[in-house]
Length: 159
Image 1: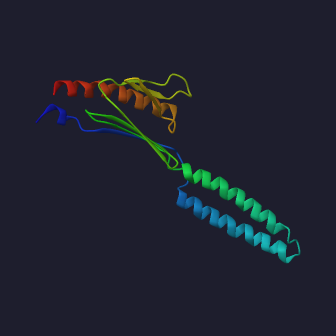
Image 2: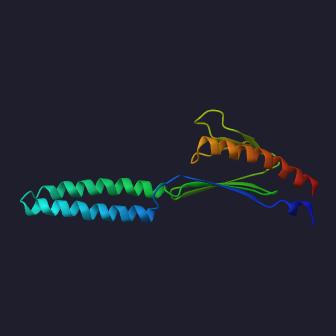
Image 3: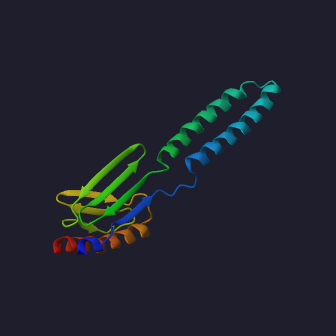
């Protein structure tokens, strides 16, 4: 067995912490609409027909807020390290960005401050990752990357 096959691909998934999935959000919005229209209907039956306009305005504003939330609920970053490639994928709304770096030249800088991100640099390209996870998780991933990247480079040179 060759040494380069001894190391399997390492992967990290950094996801946004969302309390509701887009489906649950749609269900919550449906319940909110039903309740709001019942209350508005009662007021309309009592002669206060203007309430329905405010109900529509309120539900429209909530719909916009929910759509923005749902669009970014699945935002994430995926890191895959193999002997040939350090692949960083960013999923932001409907956009996907893929950055391929050579692990032999890659250097990982751990975050220093509370708002800092992990910096990965190789061949003049610098990528910041970890914006969807806590500081403790960023530091843990930075340590793991700092340990794994040099070992991958050694495996590739040994082959």
